[in-house]
Image 1: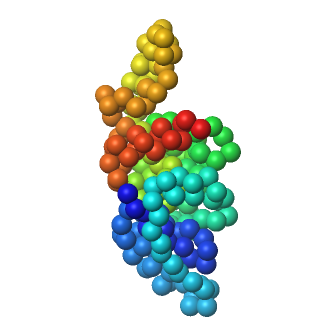
Image 2: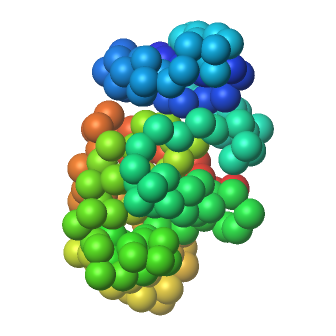
Length: 179
């Protein structure tokens, strides 16, 4: 798969599989004073390049356009895979970790419109039923030879919605959890 990276003055504002986010970002840039933006650029990269880019990009290299609430959620997303061992969260667990325990639906909406795929790992947030099922499988698997490794690869677990499909979501989950 190819990804379209939109950069503004060298900062990543969007990573998406199509130009939809670019159009939204362009609308946001149009609201800025003309002299405040030096360059806007898009480029295509492969999934492997995206995986490498995620490891290299610090928060200071991201440019987020959204409400203050959305930006707080997206910054909390960034923290899921940077500075600590990534893990899966339910929407409720993530909302609490992000500081919005009573705003699960609003947090879920911010995750759904995440402008920077993979780098902001919304794929690590899954339905509560998925977490319950995963815990059940881990408990059962702990009694086996495999001790619960790779359970997130099982096709029987519904990983939830993802703009680029459940197979890519499973792939991204595996890549981040296997670090």
